Image (spheres, rainbow, N blue to C red):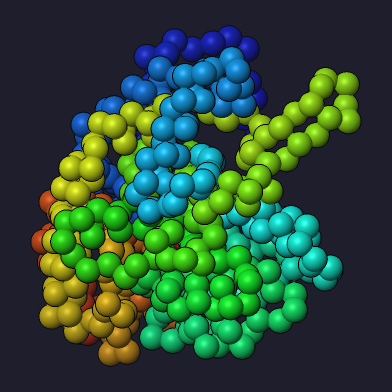
Length: 413
Ligand SMILES: Cc1ncc(COP(=O)(O)O)c(C=O)c1O
């Protein structure tokens, strides 16, 4: 039966209690049980984001003239982002609602730039590694473009195969830093070389890595270069609501040159309410998301992010060693905050489902089959417990006590 609007209202304390009750079936992310969807940096950071979001909950990023506070906060956030990604003078960008919107906006900018610069084909193409996030296919669907997916080699972009996939319709190359499925940074330098040679737009999808990789590097660990210090990187997506630890609804899309960014902006005046110019897909933009990102970045500062990056790397190393001892194989050589592991001799489906049944939520990989962890600073507290659980489930699986039947719990199901 459909729920109808109640005739009269209910007092907030009762509603709050009801909502807490509804939450009882949700994954226990505060207890470190989620390694997808939530990036837990510690309660103090959440308090800052919460309060800043609440303070600007009614303000609207659509109206910079009405809210110079938001305009300046967004400019500060984008400036900090450009600095972290080693963008040169003259670079530009905006905040968006998330990784998907950042990617779609960069694709729109690329498409319109190509058309303004002699591209006459019907369907502009994006050449991307098979490990690229589906946000590009969503963007292509919306924008009348096409994504050509190229198989990966050793879990990263196969640069030669990508070069061979370029046709006269290609307008964009993509590399991820890192890719969602494997957590490995694609060879961006090599992709940039091709992009320069063939005058193509190279987008680096650093949605996951953009706000953790720079700090892993500053903490002294090796990180494959991926940012604007590489000549040939045209644009980048980097999500604040992942490892920027901001409230949800916050990402950045960045361009080496303001002239390229200008293609992102949509301008319109053929209606009876004057001209409208918006840089993002959204019209109304939540002031809270801008304010919370600004507050969290300033609250943590470089030291706060580096300290969390250290904890992430320590946890990642502990988990990688632990799963290796249990007979799993870690996919590739993860340098940032993701870890995926599998193995032919273990029943990954059965173990993955049993983990979920015991309250541990993570996504899974399908090529090859694996378990996929996005590590948060707070996972430090539960890494031992996770490995103990996994050891027990591996033993149970080997003695035939686990079943791989039942519905698959995937990344977005
Ligand atoms: C590499 C990568 N790109 C893009 C996205 C899409 O981001 P969002 O879910 O914020 O739209 C994700 C999400 O996990 C991602 O991992």
